[in-house]
Every structure is written in structure tokens, then in C-alpha cells.
Image (cartoon, rainbow, N blue to C red; front, side, top):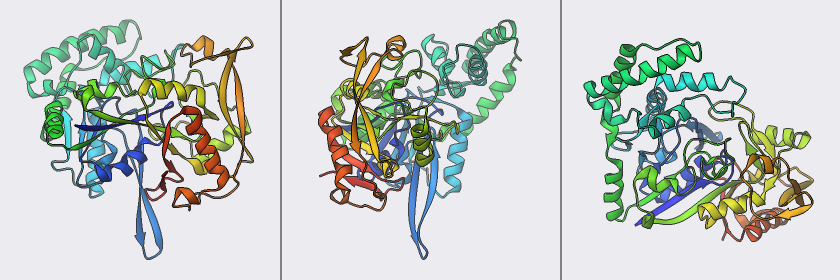
Length: 431
């Protein structure tokens, strides 16, 4: 059995889409194991033409990033919550771009569906005083229904009577909440039933028991790449709660989110941005609310692929990363966006936390402690050289290699790849 897991080792937006696309050349299956359409995985594909290299950018929200390799089958696992509107839109965009999905996209019959009332409730709650900075796409409310055992699954679309019964019960309850608590508009049961029955006609060709499919593939020695969304510090159990997502982006989520055994996992790769970013509210120890943060944002194009929201930016935090390495069992790291640091005279890296003058060990996930800590930094001299044209690790500037290798040494983890741009060919293997 051979399953590689790719996890975001920070707060998401690390560039997992590019790394998964790069690795997909050598696997048979790419499977997404959690999250919803709040995730945005960007893939930039270069094409050589008479006027040089041109690129085309794709932003995927639900379909795994391996879809651009014609030999790869892509799986949306049971741990994902699916917005039918977003999925059909994504399928349409890929087909319009000439991507053949026939027999290459599989959707778990046990995946839960995001309903119109989930989106409405999410947007209302994010307008209150206790908002946490979600995308408002119904992800949290869909997971709430999943764990209160009232959710609608893909398999429910196959039986209109079952769908009607479940939806009527759900919508009556949600309408009471919308009307009496939130003073909001209510929803029409028949309209939603008809809409989702139409969705069933379109999605039915992709639906299967993906856990059984993956089991059979592993028995045949197929290579599987498990793709997570968001990042470790947004994990509902291990992140900076309550400013987290509603699922498990950490490596452990791959087994429950795909229905595969832990014994099938052969490696875990963490994707790490060469600095740090975060979207939404919550603690962010190394955030730079100054010219440095603005410079990282503008140079790195740090705006959400899904929402367009500006990302909060700061220096790399090795204390939090050491925690992520431990929780995920990360054996090797892919560093992205190194080129964003090309013009900095100095680059800071957080190497320690202190609280009330005393150094603390580990990464405290409670908000109160994270907001009270002071940081220790190690300063690296910048390399002041363009790296986006470099095509082998040994050709990187010496100071860039010093920076990269210090990260690996402090984390006691192998640095496997370094990305110096968005394109496939801007990925360097560290040998």
C-alpha cells in the first residue's frame, strides 16, 4: 500500500495546489479528504509557444489538483462537504478548458452536501460580534449537521422520498431559527428539493463508494496522493481554537476523510511558505502590521484564491512549525514562495516564545497565551538576487541555501523541494 499525504503545515494558503500538481505526474490517484469550497488551490500551467512561455492559471475549490494530469483519477472523499453549485461550476470550467473528466472524477456517496440554509446561517453568524473570519460558504453549519446526524449526504439524492423527508425536517427547523432568532428570510422546501434533484442528474455519473475504490486501488499497488485543504493551525482539534475550520486538515484526517487505514500511509509531506500568512481572525504571533507585512503581501500576491481577501503576513514561525511537524508526523518539507524574499536586506525567523520573561516550550494553541507571548528572532542576511529563473537547488544563492538549510536543521526535518515561482518548472528538488 502506498499513500502520500500532503498537508498545509501553517494556516493554509501554503501553495499545496502547486505541490500536488507537481507530484501528480508520478501517482495514479489524487484524493481530497476534508474541507469544502472554502479552499482555493491554485495551479499555474506553463505552455511553450513561439513567443516564449505563456501560463494559464486555474483555481480549484473541490476537485483535487491532480486533475490536469490525464492519467490521474481524482477522488472527492467522504470527509469533504460539497457545495453542488460550486462543484458543477468547477466541472463546467474544466470541461470548457478542454480537461477530460470522463472516468477521472469520483465523488463519495457518503460526502455531505452544503445546503442553501447552511450558507445563509453562515453569512448571518459572521455579521455578529463573535465572528471568526470564515468565508461564509456554509462549511461550518454543514459540519454541524453532519455531527448532529441531520446532514444530507450525496447518497440521499438517489431517493426522492428520503430526500424530501430529511429536507422538510431540516428546513422546518432552520426556518424557525431564521425567522425567530435571526429575523431573516425563510426558505422554500419544494424549491430546494427540485434544485437538488436536478443536481443529482448531473452528479450521478461521478458518484461511487470511493473508500472501496481506494481499497481496491491500493490492493493493485496504485500510488495515491491524499490532498488536504487549509492548514494544521486551522485544525478543529489541534489548531488555534476557536479560530479554526470545522474539519481536520492534519494528516490524521486523511484516514477518516477517505476511508483508508493508517497502515496504508507511507509518507507525510508538509507544505511551508517561506514566510507566514493567515486569513481570517485569530492569533498570529509573527504578523507584521507594518511596511514588512505590506511588502510581503504585495510581492507575494497574498490575496485569497477563493474570496480575494487580503492575507495577514509575517515572518516564518519555527516554533509553530515544530508543533505542526510533530502533530502531522511530517517527514519532509516543501518550501514555497522563496522568491518573494529575494529583495529583502534581512529576513527574520521566529525561533522561540517567552511568556512573562520565561522561555516556553511547545506551541500553545489557546488564544490567551498566544496573544501574551513575546518572540525571539534569528536574523538572516538576504540574498538580494532573483531566484525565479533558477532551475536547480545548487544554483540558488548561498544565502538562500543557508536560510533553507537552517529551517531544516532547526525543525530536524528534511527539506525536499523549494518553489521559486508559481509555474510547474519553478520547482527545485533538494538532493
